[in-house]
Image (cartoon, rainbow, N blue to C red; front, side):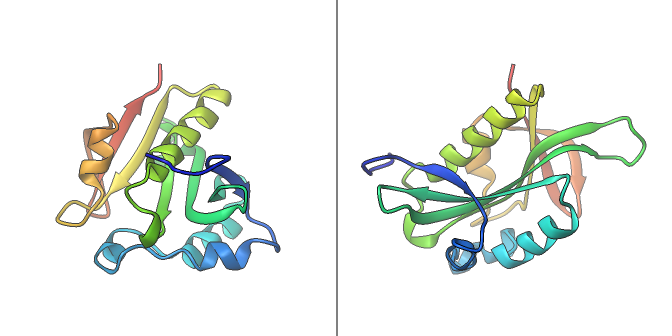
Length: 159
């Protein structure tokens, strides 16, 4: 349950908040499952038309609690047969986990995909202990039988 006055919201990454974004750290046992924010921002820089990086902040003081990066309309198979949008990265700060910020992040990406006319949200995750599989399954994602670089591909119907 999210506990704060004004509630969580997304902010674009700017010179004003980049240090806050770079300071987001997951639990040490989760580091195998998600790249650090600095790598995500570098990838966003080289994929400007695809990547959608956002800082997750909460409260009247805009306290940083996480980072997400979505992708929109990528050619998943590089042949035009699978145009997909989804959640590329999700880093919830170690001290902010278990408070609903991950769910908020997924719901925010789903809303943006719907706004852009999409009806499915894709995500990949590392299987195994301390990975995010149970989190994504609990939100309704279902493995679609694909794997990418050892990660499970999950899809959530938005319609």
